[in-house]
Length: 180
Image 1 (cartoon, rainbow, N blue to C red):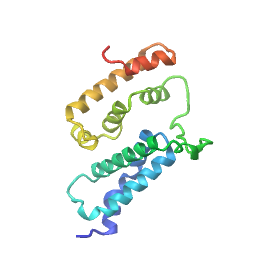
Image 2: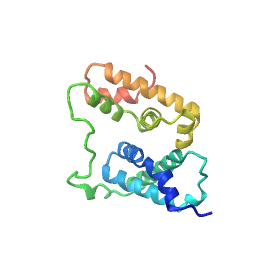
Image 3: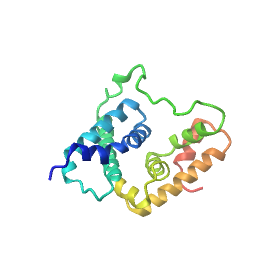
Image 4: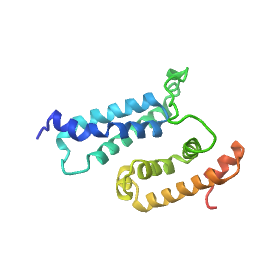
C-alpha cells in the first residue's frame, strides 16, 4: 500500500533537525551532512510504502542516515580528489559555541578526540537519546558492545577533561590506549 505524502511529512519530517545535527557531527562537514540528510529522506520516501506506522520512524531514519554516511565515507576513502572541491574550507563545520576558556568548547573538543566508534555510540545515546538497544540496532553491533563503548567513551572524556594540558603526541597516546 502506497502511503501519502502528508503521512510521510507528519512522521518523517519532525526528525529533520536531529538528523542534520547528527550528520554534521559525524561527518564533520556541513555540506556533506546536508547531502547525507537529503539522501536519507530520498531513500526513506522511496521505501515509505514498506514502513510500518507503529514502529519507530526516528530510529528507521537514523539507520538510513548511518548507512548513507558509512557509504559516503567509503567513497571518500577511495577518491583522493574528494577534498579538492572544498579548497577554501567554506563548507567546514562552524562551532556551535564560541571558543572560550573551559566549558562547552572543551567538551566538544574532547568528544572530537574520541575514536569514531566511541563517539558514534556516545552521540546516539547521550545527545540523541536512543536506548542501548536502539543504538545497537542502528549501528548493527551487540548491545554489550554499545555498553562497553559508552563506558570507554565516558572514561576517555573524563581523562581528557581532568588531565593537565598535554602535547599532541601525548594526547594521541592517551585517546588510543587501552586500559587506565
